[in-house]
Length: 108
Length: 112
Image 1: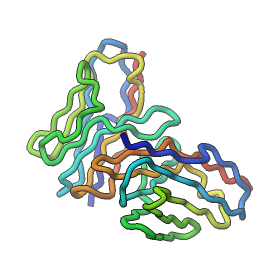
Image 2: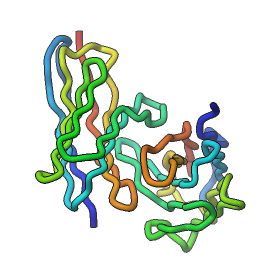
Image 3: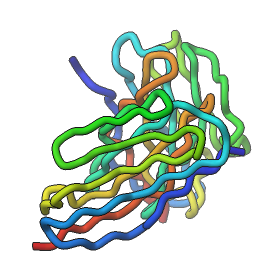
Image 4: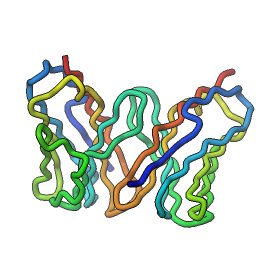
């Protein structure tokens, strides 16, 4: 059974700092997605990673995928308060399996 | 283009009562998913449809949950009878075949 693990589960960081969220998974897949969820809202797609070595960047967020290590990272550069949200990775292995989420709080 | 539409947004019922949720996916999306999200957790797949066929319902508690997708478009998810542990947000998502999911706003169920 596919397992998707994220860490950390909770992350509190200062504005302007950098940090990385990790997502590792247990079975072979080359399709991985990152989503953002604001409190009380639904999930919004951030990145689609479809091959080994894929790297996508949008603003202060950059996601990468290493299918051999079964690992994806979401890197935050110079965090701002607006990035406060819960971030989920999801692995597509015939069905889309989600991690538990990383709850990010960016403090002034 | 309209996104995934779900209703109702909120539902409060007493245990043992029935409840139903409705989802209208993005036009042209063949694949439809129902997920359940408990507070502070990630979404958990309940059922996945390819057109009108349920291709993965292994996580659906079939003793009380049922789902249908008539004509391969709209879908309903029903719980009968509801239990306290069913309180959660029920998310519908759609995609073009296998790929990026687009989620609705969700239906928040509270069972008293």
